[in-house]
Amino acid sequence: MPDDPPLIAIVDDERGQRQLLDNALRRAGFRTVLCKDAEEGFAAAGRCDLLLLDVRMPGMSGLEVLKKVKEDHPTLPVILLTAFIDVRDAVSAMRTGALDYLEKPVDLDELVAAVDDALGCTGRPIADQEALELPSNVAVANPDMVQVFKQAARAAATDATILILGESGTGKQIVAEFVQEQSRRADKPFVTVNCGAIPEHLIESELFGHEKGAFTGADAQRIGRFEEADGGTLFLDEVGELPLSLQPAFLQVLETGTLRRVGGSRDIRTDIRIISATNRDLEEEVKKGAFREDLYYRLSVFPLSVPPLRARPEDILPLADLLLKSRHKRLSPAAERMVMLYDWPGNVRELRNALERASILSEGPLILPQDLPSNIQHPGPTREAAGGVLVGNMQEIQRQAILEALEKTGGNKTKAAKLLGIGRRTFIYKLRDYGM
Image 1 (cartoon, rainbow, N blue to C red):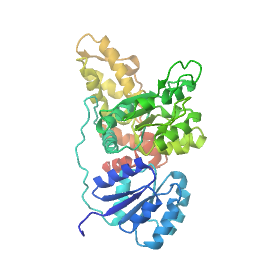
Image 2: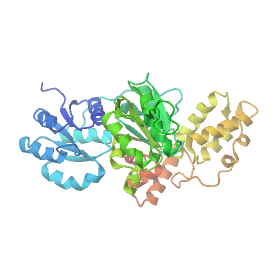
Image 3: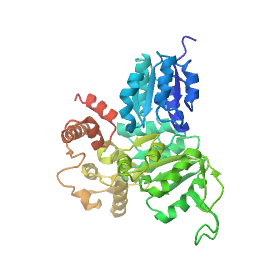
Image 4: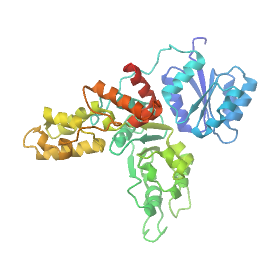
């Protein structure tokens, strides 16, 4: 039918990635066809309006597929998806006929914008306008943090692996739990493993389980965390601490959906969703050889970056109100000002601990300045929000932080956004909002 929305063929060997891209494009109003390999991609090329093509696939690579598709369908728009290490192939791809070249992990908004541009759909109404419903244990006012939860809700509709990035104490586990609650696995197990808290010699047995007699002390069969999470979600906190020696076995589970207990002789099939979190820069760990590159890409199909509390001051008082609600306490105006002036290097975790202490010390329902920890009562003359100073109203605070971040990075927007703990796209929006 001539009025049908454009049909996009998604060619990617990873099921979670296909689901994620499919969900984003359908919500944007497109039709899709999913292809798991080059052969299915060739078959779809003759009937689709645009080909979305992964570069790294077993067998024939995306670049080889691109060359053959362009021989048969020279006018078909093709957008390549690839990891940053493949950027050196960009010139070759463009010469072969690729229209655009997006890096993985893919920013879904950027993807939709690229497809719009390729098909001349600018100005097309966006289909995804549902209101965001947050659980009762979440208080969010900052636009960047609202966007994190919106993106998490989009990812929850798929089985894509999610990597949550952010400083310690920012609330990465809250985001992971939100994904679980919004997903089809909501009534299934949500199993948490802190990879940094388990001794290296025990973590393999902890994750995969073991058979009786597998090693000294293995007096009985033990089910591992992967099997415990079957049907549900496995949340791997501090995944950057995962020993390098265990990463190949971990990668195999992600790729095949099967595991083998320590000392076992048979493969066990599992159906789980993996959500990981880390405060490390895994790209840097990959470059240093401390983390496998292929495992990083499997974990980061859909990355979410949680900004630090100092970069979202609008959230401080709503969070304080939420944390104090069960104790029937509230901050006095003077205590509110002190809480706002403090830098919160420990993020939400530090805020929670400070308010718990203050609640114990306060004699009535009102928390006074003297009830707060001394470091919050006397924070010093400056506030480190990317080196920023907390003065004036919220908009002025943000504007000042942006200016100082740009100054520190010599005007580099990407580095300035990273310094502030927000995405580059959000940073650009804020520049426009403040007329900068």
